Image (cartoon, rainbow, N blue to C red; front, side, top):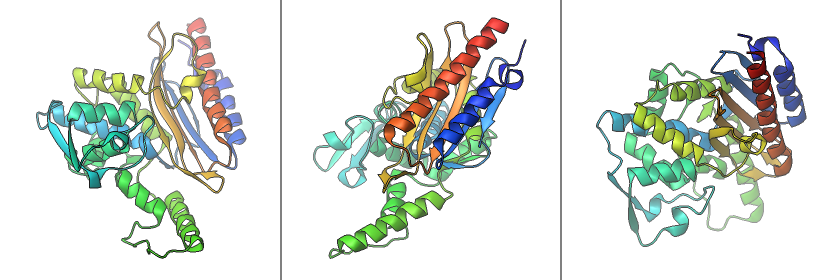
Length: 315
């Protein structure tokens, strides 16, 4: 059986070209063909800020605790108004929050966190499992050393706001002072080692998920289904050929003064014939606009799909 990524070279060259196109941003990608074991990589050994990509290992940690009998999908979780965090790919829990507190099942929170990328739901799940360190311990227990979770979405927001160390925003803060604080926060986020993953580690996480090495068969199916339903935003999905499915999790930072700290997508591409390829792509420090960033991701998927098709023909 020919090894597409190791011997054919076009995919490796395509990734190199895309990384050049992404400059001055840094694009890191790992592509792993689960049928052949072949791998293509660019800038894949360094760690990138995950943003909402971290919700995938959070969900896996929750489902592992369900497998162990410590939690249940029907378990009720109360969220107070103080727990609400802004941000999601679709109208979020926060947008529909009523009163001082609301109760959700674990199953509802998993759906919101993964399929809708809801930040409030993700933070509730982080608290439920015992904190960020428990999530890191879970991936470490499975030999995934290049991925770490150290804080929830509220913690990430504090870094961006420049209040990560307990600073208070003065009530009389001037526009100039606010801008200086936000600049400091954005700079701090870009250099912060927390909540990061290498593309290699993210690819390993996805490989183990697909192969049923992280969770029970039932929990594996559930997490994959939630990832299949993440239809927004369309990054890798925009470059998929007809008939190819993608179970993915995106991650996006706010953009500030023309720079985007994180623009990510990790996923599992599967063809009708069973051919399966893992893709983990992270873009940091990008100066490109949204359309250009999206085009890079679509072209990653197209390059992977083209290579996978050639592999099938050679087999």
